[in-house]
Amino acid sequence: MFQFLFPRKSFPFFRQADAMDCGPTCLQMIAAWHGKTYPLQYLRNQCKISRQGVTFADLIAAGEQLGFKTLSAELPFTVLAAKAPLPCMLHWNKQHFVVLYRVTAHKVYVADPALGRRIRYTIPEFMEAWQLADKPGFGRALFLEPTSAFYEAAEVKMPDTDLRTLWPFVAMHRRKLIPVGISLLVAAALSFMMPLLTEAIVDRGINKKDVPILLLICAGQLMLFLGKQITDFFRARLLLTLGAQMSIMMLEAFLLKLMRLPFSFFDNRQSGDNMQRVTDNQRVEDFLTTSAVTFVMSVMILLVMGATLLYYNWLIFLLFAVGASVGIFWTGAFREKRGRLDQKRFRVLSANQDTLLEIFSAFQEIKLTGSEQLKINQWHACSKRLLQ
Image 1 (cartoon, rainbow, N blue to C red):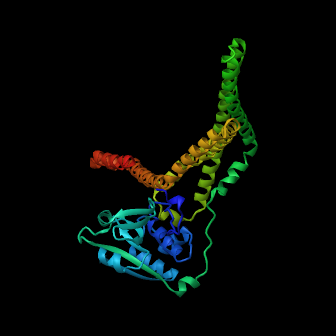
Image 2 (cartoon, helix red, strand yellow):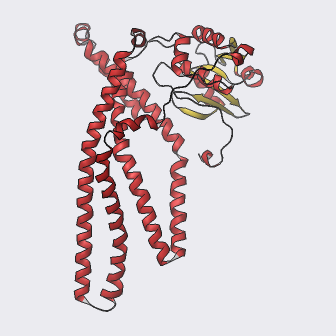
Image 3 (spheres, rainbow, N blue to C red):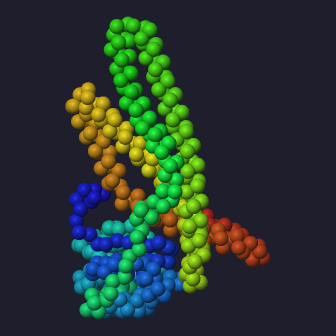
């Protein structure tokens, strides 16, 4: 859980972008382990991915094109743990591909592109997902050993996919961000004044029993509170308008990009994946207009309150700093688990979208065949996976 505090050389991990990308993503991880990082789209083309994903034969052909020497095998776990060259690719749960990169006496470490990295299984848990239904104790694996052709192959440039790609959408509205920044500064100033007024209430109002000054300070606190509420209201209103405009722009850019793609792209994409991309646009909007602003506001209040405590008593400030550090570390400790749950949520929501689209596009056939309850049960089973 606290691995981020003690970094070490780890197996390179990539998350799959779509439901059927597990095979190419596993190939991407193994290639990166041996020193070459390929774009996912390039590996999709090499694997000739379809709507049903890829097969062992597709992965073998793609691996050999990249310069790997490949070997697929059906073998027992004892041989896999003792003699298999790692990392290798495994057929998982009869419908998925993962990468096995480490085996110890009691634990097995798997990189699952759909869920997250450094997933540690006990041997019984591993066998439950890996072994064949008709051949207990055995499972399928694909071994890839780099040759000289792998290292001599030309580099394929990775596309830029960091947060800077969102900057053009923000830059077009940068003037509208000025009032938001001013409101944040005002909110920080009001937060700084509240403790000072509280001190004045105790020292000058209560100790000296000065009722007029006490009423005056209380009125000042009330005005500060109302001012903060008004500032928050206008900031939320600005962010709502700004977020809606950026959301429309991002969705328009996404649709235009889809329109420029060739027919082959849609031959191997599930409709639910594209629908889920549209839904995730709302999450990007929330990040730009809510999470980012909340983070800036939290940092400003943290600095203001820290400076106030340091002014009054350095020991109290030290206690505050220790508590804030513990909170930051505690949040970071669950970062990997949150990412894993996020990927699992995307996969389940994508499957849910596919099920709904299938139902909506085949209402007549469903009613003719009398399979209404069957389809509802399928959707219900898929939806219940969100709660697991």
